[in-house]
Length: 320
Image 1 (cartoon, rainbow, N blue to C red):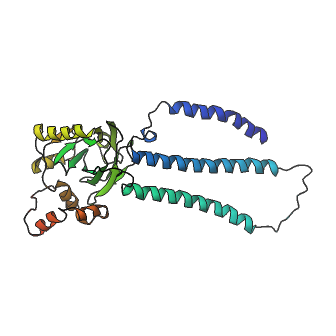
Image 2: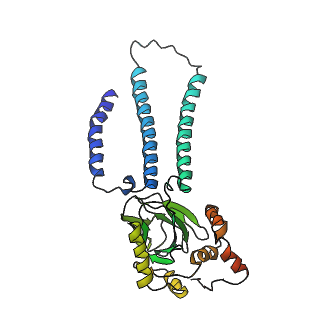
Image 3: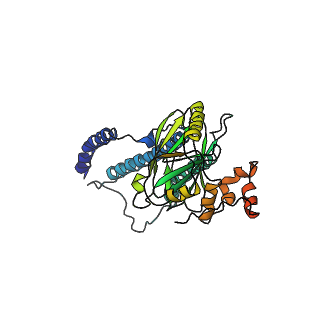
């Protein structure tokens, strides 16, 4: 038995070296954070991995020790105790340790998750968060900018160094919005409006993708996230307003039908489009728990009040 374990121990360094060498063949963007959200999640991954590694090392150390210490020997004088069945002290120890480990991992994960959900730590300056609404379709992504009144498809431009609050929904099967260099993924679901804060430290182009199987064209649901300096971002908005066509109600109907499309930009889009998509699929945009910030917005409730009075209901037949 000992010789067998020694044989495996000789192979272990070679296996570790092979894994480390092959790891350099891939660009693991998840482990290369480019923003504070991704960095926080990376630190959590590292912390969790170290805790798990510590557990593995202790368990294997105890395993080898027990095999060696309690091996059968010719001079074994250990007492024979056929009636022995438990040891309260040992049971308390070996049940307490995993409970404490689970509490540590659970607390750190929950604390980090709730902080990121609220955007804690991103508002370290006087810069107001930019809101971008993302809608997953078959099989493309529609991004609308409620602050700037422009829209884009399969490409989203954000200001570098500024918090971005993504509001996400789906007008197709459930999907998952993921920009691994900037943060974790979150699902987009019909009738629901989910929230996700991201922030890019520096200008750059980042990979984004739908990370949930959603049918025939799901592999093509990729998009670019382009982070520009604030002045260039404002120039981009002005350029889109000047040179791009408007997204009309009929245009959205066509866009929302299953199929692939290239990137596109729109100088405007129908008022309340995102909210209408949420309501159309059975949700209530203004009652979503993560939309509490809208209650303090000066325009909060105006659209819904107008809808009740029949004044601003957008006539959109978006069924398909």
